[in-house]
Length: 590
Image (tube, rainbow, N blue to C red; front, side, top):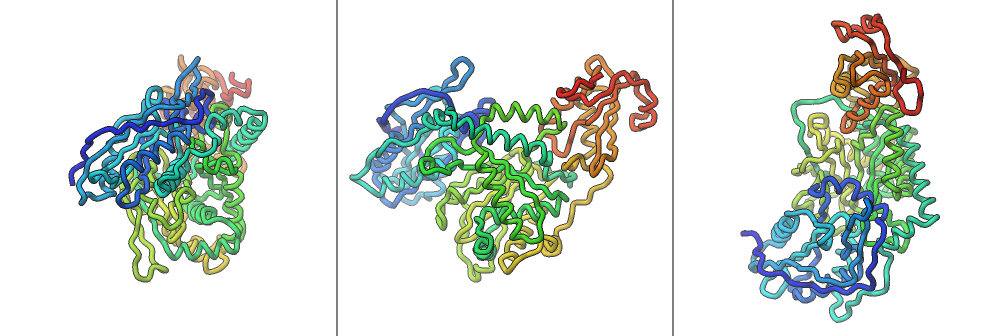
């Protein structure tokens, strides 16, 4: 079939309850933090296929969407910089030009929808001069075959799109009785609430939670040696009806959600592979925990930091612990990202580490009605398949499938997505780095997680039995790997950091220090690096984006370097010009 043909643009007029201008919310600020330098990022634009009954008149689509524009201020908001500060400006009235495409009656709805989405996504949103929403409708004569939207991430998150999709379906189904309804809690109201004394107390508590954990978590969870030559992304989706049946029984015993059980099972298998008892995940929180935020449309979601300690005798204990960890993370997921970045930079300097955010957990199922085909609306960096539906098969109670999907480039080493818990468990697992996390690793973790869930569904499972149950074994580590605090660090990568950051001969050593190691760098003083502080500052400036790497705890600057840079005794025989930890929080830099 040929691409849908743009035949016209239809003007959709809207009239809201108010106009206004104000500061950004925490969620908007969080989004703008990464979007401002990368407006072409695929995740800066989100998409949704609107539900349409057969033979829907185009006039109904236009009327329903006009009400959504009037009802939700985020859809009629532009963004402007004033005195170095981004602000949101809500229009009370205006016009949205929807694209109208003509197709024939034999057109494939899914294919048509995707092609319209592709066309709408061709250029980034102009947040100053353009509404943050685009609409396209495919028509067969005067009937709508398909309707799709794309949004700026500054206007919506996944929870918002699910709400808009549900409300659109309700409006389409209530012809003759469509209204904007009563005033709602809007982004301007949310920004004012966050700036109130109560709101500031909450964001301050969230900041304390983050800063406490940033000092106690691994720099990189998936600290793995390279395997092969692959360096691109890979993505797989597991569908398991047997795991779904197990989830019901686990929930009955633990009173925990399917999401907690899935993340607990994943933590259990990851812990075995990487030899790490503390698993940490950046987990997107919808932040819709109060009644007035339940139907809030706006960028509300922010990262939660879920820290799971894989200890305790049984998997049920781990599920309960994971559930509590997710709750604590969700309660601490509305924060001022600017303040957090400031504190994180200070903690990084003290620790000599930069939290890599290498593992992400996203519970998409929270936004998709159970048992529907709305999994086709899943669009994330690592998992954007054209269709995630599976046809029922004989013996489905014991059936599972593993399907590989195309994936665009993205920065994380692992992204775990709970896409659906019913009628079958659907989980996606993706990597942006197949050099360190090859496809067999992804398949092994998914199958291992499934095995843990199925076994736990049959009865209490001891965590000590997970390796034998799954066949997973710890990743082999040679002497190049050392423990630094709770993190695995690769000495050769520390050496690479010194070479690239300092531009002068240097050598890194790891000396036993309690249960871990202490890193020391011997280096030749240069014009640009004459103090420990200068050396540490240079290392920290080059640390971002590196996995399983830490800056040294101690720097020793010499007036000359040995011929063999790996000869520690020779380094120690050279006169010392300066020594110290190089941290801003100390004065021992000479």
